[in-house]
Image (cartoon, rainbow, N blue to C red; front, side, top):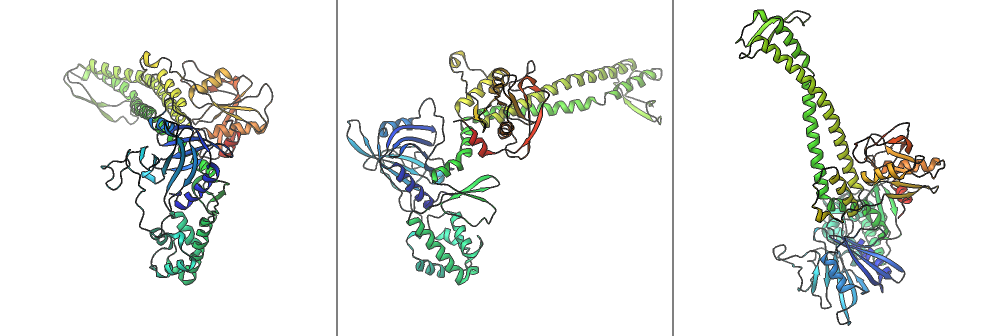
Length: 587
């Protein structure tokens, strides 16, 4: 993981500078494995995020908003009991460990000052957040670890806290350049330089090891044999410079962007990508981490909180898709119904030569230009007249089936289109309130079972569309679900306001509020970019976005939520721009 022990040391130094002496004002637990502390710090109020998520554990200051549950979890209530009003005395990282110890001074039930520790273990799948008393005993933790889960180390209330078992690797921070050269001279020559560093020393991520190898040998996969004496000297020099900078707290929080997506981050400038990545240096680790994790954590929270919703909609969509496939095959079978009528005609013209009990009529096919013979299957229990009537009946049945199947297919495709739009809307949800509104929509449309009146009473919620402000100062609204889309387009927007939507792909309704005037071209373009970003075309370039005054947008009678038709429109081709979206967003 990119947040290795060295990178974490820079982050701890940053947090100490910002938080030491600060007072914990409020405590929230927006997710099952993350806690937010609102701190009155010496330099102003800040929010401290402590994430024990196995995929991305970390401590950081954050400016991102997170929706809190209506009822605080038990661990949150415990932290409020013990840490509300506590003062942050120090923030410590045990040497080369991905562990951060927040040393706190709190008040107990009698009003006496007591020592408390809040320990974040940022170690992948073993990530945890643990509250300790002044003696080092565990009060409680986010994830309890009993003897069945780990024979070597239990994490349970009442036990004394022990650090995770240390890795049997060398300490790279204490070596001088001469000592590095000695270690490198004794290293096996067939080893790749980065792998030798990773296997022999603690605290460094694979990315940092590759960077050291690249600086010494010009490649990330260079071997110690290929480096030779001169290359090993360069590697020793690079390592000495690296750890000197770490000791002196000289860090450069760097975000690595590949194909317009944040892919990695580190605490030093990197050269190994050689133009294959865009590098952005941030003033603080916290600002970098907000940027790196914002989108992926938002999607993860939606998956966690809306998992049942996603599953229900996906099942309904797949069921509808299978039904459409079956109906399309049935419709294709009706295409050959004309042959049924021809068989009826041929049987009728040959009644004189037929008798009851025949299984096949072999005769000339006068519908064939070459006059070839044809074998027509018969029901031997029926008379010739009844066999002819049977073919005419099947012909009429197929004709009626074509009409009905065409209607059903059109209805099914609209239903499939609607369900796909709901799945897209779920990805735009920013919290439980947005997901609840989508649940209400699916209940109203019959896809989810309605709760009993006693349970449902008073629970109906409504969230607000996303709000933006164009560079010229015009308001832009973006619906996050079909209910909001209908509300924006059909009820709130004036006929002169401009409506935007991606062409032939699912996305949000976007309204540019013109306030009775003529919108400028830049505002029109920015609204189109927002429509492209909040759509299935987010990862594409040159996305077609249709726009037209709201007066040309109509909702057909009986249409599903969010479904409209429009005429007299223009099309703009734009490229989604995340930075523009963030800049225009009204918090």
